[in-house]
Length: 572
Ligand SMILES: Cc1cc2nc3c(=O)[nH]c(=O)nc-3n(C[C@H](O)[C@H](O)[C@H](O)COP(=O)(O)OP(=O)(O)OC[C@H]3O[C@@H](n4cnc5c(N)ncnc54)[C@H](O)[C@@H]3O)c2cc1C
Ligand code: SF4
Image (cartoon, rainbow, N blue to C red; front, side):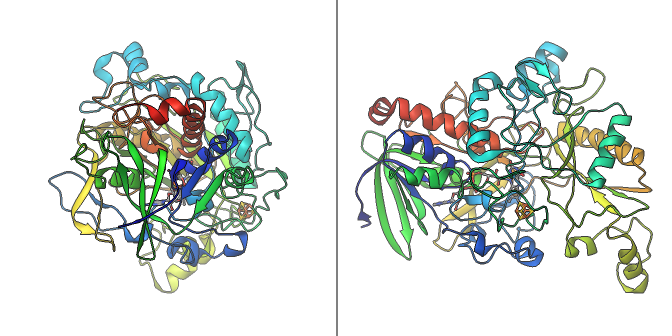
């Protein structure tokens, strides 16, 4: 029998990007919150500018539960399994994956909330791709805007606004939705290379702007500004300039005296009472089982683990997994098409040894529905992102653009020595839609060390994603050539394996037949169970998910704080 602990108002499973944000409004409202976190505290003393450690060995000093439960993947139900990843897309620590993420902090654009209705209105219903299960969000950008604004100021985001209360400012993204005010900090500075690329885009008649980043461009909340030395691509920041929740919302929630954090606690099950309400969570620390009772449970353990924990939490009332009597847990899964990049070779050095991936220049002209798709064979688009980041091992792995006969030996070494700083690879994030054939479930054979099945991904990019990837690559090639590139290489789109940008599985929507959680993030079937993270998002847009997941987490937590008694006592 697990050791039963003292009941709390709210238990949050996972204190990462989303759970680490939700703790703050709850604690500030005077609720007692327990954060049950698989990882440990890491501090800036744990981080090193070490490519081998960060990018290849996946931070061995952290508790790497995640690396023991890497999802399996097969493109379709009939295909063989893909080779298994060696490191998990996320990590375990207080602060979660915000410890080592790139910290690009994008809002979604207005279209991303209304893909179905806007596509029908502009091009006709036949343009929704066959087999897609995409739905409009239950609310629009205007409803989420106050929460975006709150998060940008709570964690600190550097950027340039493009649309304050309808006033377009060409220094920012002219395609963004209406925002209430400017970012709390000016953008990170550009590099000589990103400035040159921005000028080339403008010469093409495109609009460029510095991307938003949860990295201090100046001293903020008592923490240092960024030093631009880099090596934090999959690494932590040793001066706390990167605004992980471990240095922002979580300590602020602790300061209220209402947040208790239990680290090294591996949640294995969400429990229910006889009435079908969530009663708390069971976790294991060093082989000992504990039961943490709670009036409300918030699950914030990242998309793959959110789905897995629900499917593992089988009970009499939920024989197919918690909140899964409608068979929707694991459905509407998709991961961002971040692949199909474009790499360019220039005849001069770009000096990209300095800088970090969130420091760069963006083009949104070919994202979402910012351009006319009438004569095209896809919907959606991609954000083009050029950034500064070069590390020795990655540089040595550069393409030789067919200019050497071998990838070893004297000729190859001479090429690398001359050209290692003359390449640039763009980051092209593209609209990805959910489809009936793409889903998550439990792997029938592969298990974690505790004996629980890992998540299985059955998913592949469909025709819409493949066509738009080629279109976006064409645009990127045009941009590189305008800037003086002498050779171009295009990456393949590949397949939809485990991703740092994984969406769905517990989608949000008004219809319980097609969605797991309601418009506030609470389960349609278990009223005192909330879901946090991109697992509730039904569309991706063409940009990274975390700021949206954090805005949604604050919104869910605020709704809970305002309606605590009703939610804690509502009958299923
Ligand atoms: C290298 C890299 C770069 C990235 N760059 C960006 C970027 O620039 N912009 C962006 O928007 N996004 C980026 N991302 C993605 C971003 O990190 C994730 O979207 C975000 O962290 C997800 O938030 P989350 O709270 O759902 O999960 P996480 O932040 O991963 O937090 C989940 C937490 O749950 C804990 N947990 C998991 N399972 C259990 C369990 N069973 N019991 C208890 N605790 C558990 C974990 O330890 C973790 O702390 C990047 C990711 C990586 C890896
Ligand atoms: S480049 Fe900036 S964010 Fe990255 S480790 Fe250095 S100071 Fe921190």
